[in-house]
Amino acid sequence: MRRFIPYAGVRAARDAHAPFFRPFLEVLEDRLLPSMDWLAALAGSAIPEIELAVSGAITAASNLGQPAGLSPQQISQAYSFDQITFNNGAVKGDGSGQTIAIVDAYNQPNLASDLHIFDSMYGLPDPPRFTVVNQNGGNSLPAADPNWGVEESLDVEWAHAIAPGANILLVEANSNSYADLMAAVNYARNQPGVSVVSMSWGSSEFSSETAYDSYFTTPSGHPGVAFIASSGDNGLVEYPSTSPNVLAVGGTQLTTDSAGNYVSEIAWSGSGGGISTDEAQPSYQRGVVTQTSTYRAVPDVAYDASSASPYAIYDSYGYNGWLEAYGTSAGAPQWAALVAIADQGRALLGEGALTGAQLLSTLYQLPQSDFHDITSGGNGSYSAAAGYDLVTGRGSPIANRIVAGLVGPGSSASLPWVATPASASSGIVTGTTTNLSVRGGDNYNTSALTYTWSVLSEPAGAAGPTFSANGSNAAQNTTVTFSSAGTYTFQVTITNIYGLSATSAVSVTVNQTLTSISLTPTGGSVYNNGSLQFTATAFDQFGHAMNTQPSWTWSLTGGGSLSSSGQYTAPAAGSGTATVYVSADGLTQAATVTYTPVPSANPGQPWSIWQQFLNTLMSQFQSLWQSLLLSLSGHSGAR
Image (cartoon, rainbow, N blue to C red):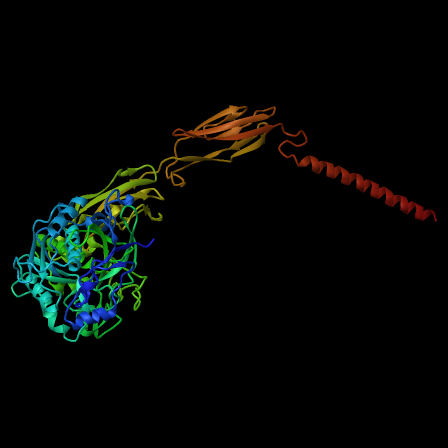
């Protein structure tokens, strides 16, 4: 069902000549017309990259009374931010000690109180420090504007949601002109503690844009500063995301299950992306980007941005509270939060904050497995595909892996170690399985460690054992299943996200256990006084004959007798059955014997009776034949 909501001038702000009044529009998949981007660039101004889906309400049954739209907890779980810890799990990865600077235009006067309401709804702490200044760092803030104000609500609330331990510095430009916005960027990058700057705005490219690229660099004498920008919501190429000094964030449509677990992503139809016409290809894209070899390609990475998977935000200045927002605006502040968390980890190892150049070059060097590779969907001009593409870049983050890669090995402290050596639940196995376990330690993130089990030695000719879990974090506990008895030595390799590893080994002896008995023959028939030899064989738990056969106990029920070696002798007369039993270690096997009298004609050779009959019959036939011949001979002589 289509719903109508107040337009609130979100798009009007993108046209310098738009009236102030707020018409009511039907908001579906809101799109920015290319001509409006062109007008913004022509006027030397930028537009916010936020879209509004519908007015929110705290009535969503699926979220148990939370506002409609994705929650911080859902995003944190879907992108694995909740898996980030430092110092062997002792320190949560939340951006503590870092400052995220957010640059926007104009003012949202209720933002501090709106952020507190947002935090209270989701059980988040208020930021350690939240500061709002103008483009020069002063307290005289720009004019309020509901259109840019809702952008500020999204940027601040979601940067804080992902990195709740980081300080937030909001720098409000006096207007949306590039001159004012760059003044705000320049102020932000020079502030002590600022390690990342988020910019959720832009416009179509323009010929003089390269003159602004130097603003997106770390000032001399300042610790590293990285710069993040949304790629735009119109499927085209926008500045400043095209600057080679800026991490450009495209858009996806995220699907999670009811618990918030990641299910899948496709490219968002509005994701800005393509090939710059003004910026040369940076060196970090070479070898990864194949769509061009001369110009800058965007985006670099991606993040959820679709109206089908919007975010909950709170804004009480231009709106009535809870809203659902989407667009690539959401990705820039959350990638900025990711970088702040990485800088937190680097600080714990004594490393400096990432510069933009370090961030971009490292992201392009990380393995593709650190990203959710988006391979379907498109933005109308380009389609997502395996590896780098012009809609989603390298993909969306698997945050714990990305952060680990950005922290980098850097020092020997990044080597994992064996916290608890490999061991078996039983070193002497009498069955077919045993449980192996080990625990690794890592200065960065134990939950990112993988455990790979292998066999160093095994009995000759034995088939290799199998593991219930292997090559994953869960494989720190695994069940090994054997196929033969003997002594085995297992080694586990503990590997961290950097590919560094440690090993541990454990030996297990599997003893043969009597499991079944085979009795040969399985039964038979004998004549009186006849005998039948039985043989018993013991088999182990794998169906193999035991190397050392047990001492057998033989017993008999019924007629006849049984020796201690398993030879049965039938009674001298009569007929009947007997049962032969053999036992060892609590197991018993049985065979049935039938005995009968020996035929009188030829005991021991029952076929001789028929032979005697045939011989007699043959003898009688020969006598008759001779008589016939004599008779014929006599008759012939009489003639």
